[in-house]
Image (cartoon, rainbow over all chains, first blue to last red; front, side, top):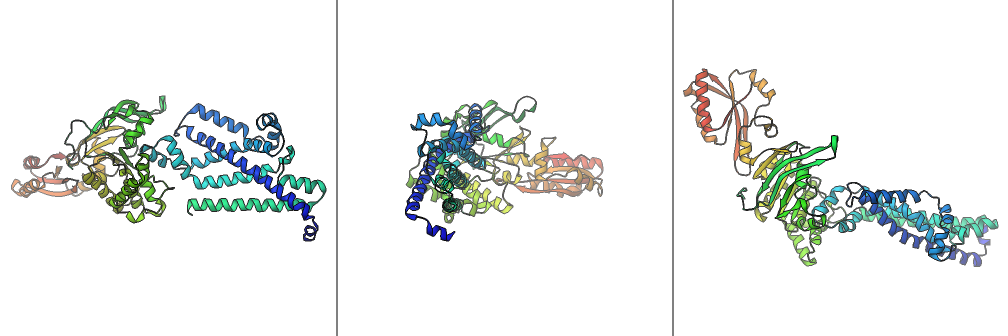
Length: 225
Length: 347
């Protein structure tokens, strides 16, 4: 294996791999920002509108819950195809990294919503009651009590999400996107060069491990354990 | 402060308040036609077994719960009619202390105490000054930068009290504030509540199932059972008077100041005398009557009883077994009645 890597034409694979890493980071980062924020809003909605919640509202909860359950189980690869017309009308084209980001946002937003909801459920309701008793507005309670109280678990949840997004981004090649997944298939698998495929695997492992280590560290810092 | 010096307008008033949970067959009436008033500066205790509706009752004072019928008036507002938005203003004038402390784990001790001040839009410098002042008041100035999980139970509750007092409220609600604490810490927290009442003039409503809490801090008390207030008045009167019937069960059970049916059986094994319970409201008078027992031709044996102290005075009940000619005993009971209320103990 080592021999093989020495034989690789690094003047070609070097820049190609770097570009692929850049594409992956680009897709993951943008979809993480958008899906993270929208998912957070939907997750908070799910949690607060349920019975006995801060904004208890059965119709809103039912609708939100229904939509989340409707979209979340659709496999990503099917979603890429199914959303094509929407992607074209919103992004302007149906192929490329930006089109992939659009689909990734759809695919992950609702999963994030569930993760956020589950972490908020674990908050002690007494703490929220205390804030209400002080006269804090509902928006203030959400922003300054709920989210900070659940911050540690939320960081771990979002670490899970960003790794899932890395996973999704590997399918970008299907609609002409780049990234490490595309690199592994196009440069490695399709050209019968397993050592190139494995190069991609190693890069992904380092990428994911780094994210997990950062996430764990941040969560531990917040939870002071 | 001796409470009950009824002001023109009570600070808190419940008018025929009922709160039901659920509908139809499964409906539970947590609070059942309760009317009460709390005056400025007093400490009002509500005592009852768990499930008596105390929690629901206290939460109607700051609008965390709404009555099904009736109305709650607090600080001149009909709190039961306010929207959540309008409630915010009144709530900033009502502090609340909880059984499980309910401190924010995401904030330091100082952050917890300062939170209600942020809500009330205090300036940063004022906030910092107030937080130090409060931590000084509860004796935790050195813990400002620690997090709640680094504190003991008693310290947590002191932070809870500092936080509840932060925005200079008129009213402090104490929801089983010592029930999660051990006896020595309980005394510490009760002393703090008492100081808040005496030094800051804050009106306190405390709900509890512990007689100790009522004895230590309350001016007036309401005994709650199955959603109703079965007895209310000045703590001393409630505790020092012999009681009848079912409504006596809570006070009696909690005070252990009169023999239980098992006690009576045990007492009966060694004495056949007439059993009476006498109030020790005026213990000197009772003592002098007892001193004359021999002259009446009556023998007495103390079979049960003891003294307790409330915020204002000592009181107690003494159960005696009286032996002698029945006429003489009758006469002696008459003399005793003049010194303190007497009640027969059912054999």
